[in-house]
Amino acid sequence: MTLDDRLAELAAQLAPLPGVLVAFSGGVDSGVLLAAAVRALGAGRVVAATAVSPSLPASERAGAIEFAASLGVRHELPRTDELSRAGYRANAGDRCAFCKTELVEVLRPLADRLGIADVVTGTNADDLRAGFRPGIRAAAERGAWAPLARAGLTKDDVRAAARRWGLAVADKPAAACLASRIAYGVPVSAERLARVEAAELALRGALAGAGIPVRNLRVRDLGDVARIEVDAALVADVARRPDVLAAVGGFDRVELDPRGFRSGAMNELLPDPSPRS
Image 1 (cartoon, rainbow, N blue to C red):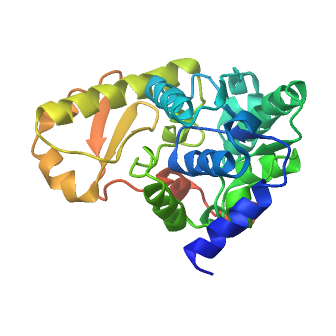
Image 2: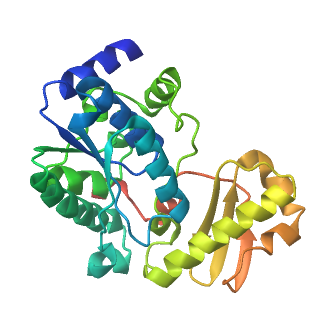
């Protein structure tokens, strides 16, 4: 199938719906899904919902608000409380399942109040093949479904669609929740999430001041140690600037990962993720 074929299939899935509530994180996947829903249904039959919690960086929330407004859709900002769930705080390998359970259990009643039957997520076809994604299963078990994945749209397809449609998120770097920065087994808390957010903000500012044009950046919380990931091509430049790394505060030690940024790097620390997918 070509990209045109897959986008046509996506439109065919959405067009018959009376209305839809899109779980909108502010990223490119859910952004393309939101735009596709508007194209298929019109803005008046689409609602975006961005969950607000300590795991969502303030900058991501601001970007989501701006993007939803640009499409003219109603935008809800319900609060989620994943930190109230012991399994989420414990931060074992299945943490995302507790987060997505909380998300859908907040969005489903919201959709019901709005008279909307369908809650959809931005999961794409590549996500389904990624192996270890307990959050995807948890969302599906609670009735949320994934039009992008059903239409066979891959990550590259989603980016291509975003560029074709001139969406502001087209070239936005991947941005997972703040909890994804905390090593499995290290308990998640509001304080740790805030520490990671502050560290990434400070480091990004220091890199900009040093003239190092970073795109992807993560501060991984390993407990008392912060492990910094930047674009692989920039690792050598950052290594030569210990003053830049010193911008990261709140940890006993800061180290630079020589392998550079890798999406889902924390999954590398799991003993054998594939049987648990």
